[in-house]
Length: 256
Figure 1 (cartoon, helix red, strand yellow):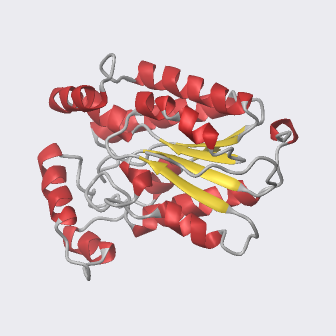
Figure 2 (cartoon, helix red, strand yellow):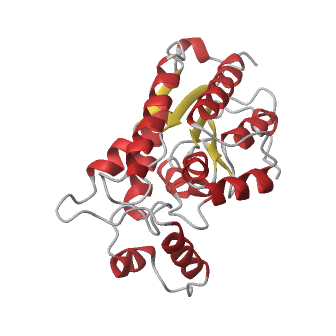
């Protein structure tokens, strides 16, 4: 993967969105593209999509050299869904460890350590950072998967709060949770159903919309129990846009 490099001395807003398939946007609503459109009126604003399918927090941290080569003014990080899935399933744990060359099984503890190191590296380079919590996993608000997802969100919130004012928390988990139905409950995360729907998404015809797939599957904020649908993607794009267009943090001003 290669990212564009910002010329030395350029004053432009350079935003890098770092994450997994929820950020890449080929299996999920393209919130990065939405953010790019929202910023299109801003002279000199550039948005780089640094999402990579299947990545865990460890992989995102290893991408930081290439992210910093872009000389970003802002970085939005959405990572952790695959760490959560790997922790919930022995099979998925093996898959993610093999495909991503992970040194150990992902867990809440390793996720926090990776996120802390990622935050510190970005802040040390004068970047304004926004950390988004992973969204709901499945659409049953009472499921074990979403109880654990709430703990991942709490970690992201805590790590962001420790960023000395240069790091903002984007409550994607909370926003997506509030959008879910309560009576009757939505569909809980199920690995086999997810893979079936994911495969169908990959094979969709050019005219098939995510809105229609959501409606057919009776889903609200996800398109397949994992990836963001249009509503969830718009939530994150809105929060990221507010972050990028807010007055800059004095502690994060870069000297070129």
